[in-house]
Length: 122
Image 1 (tube, helix red, strand yellow):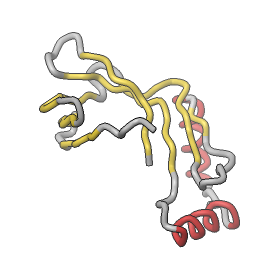
Image 2 (spheres, one colour):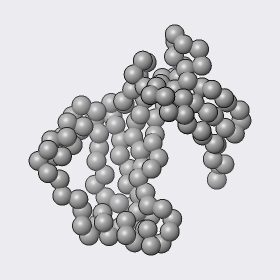
Image 3 (spheres, one colour):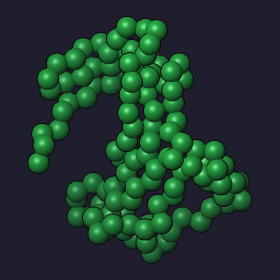
């Protein structure tokens, strides 16, 4: 799963970035057996939603402008977007603990530590 978004420096706290989430992409592992199972699950037997799940999906669409994937690409991936990004100053943030050209270590607003490495450009 890949999450899309952006961050801006927090105006009140040094080394803090506020985060907004704008969407993402879900996809199977690259193993051929995983891709076959993934496609079978999401194309042959799409998930059935209960009334409560349908209500939650409607709320997400209305409140956040979420788009739910309607189709799957050839590689099995599906993308979703939020037209009203989630987050903001004081709601979702990361504190930068370490940063260099290839790695960033941050602590999220709930205390979780994340380590990111830069993906080489293709």
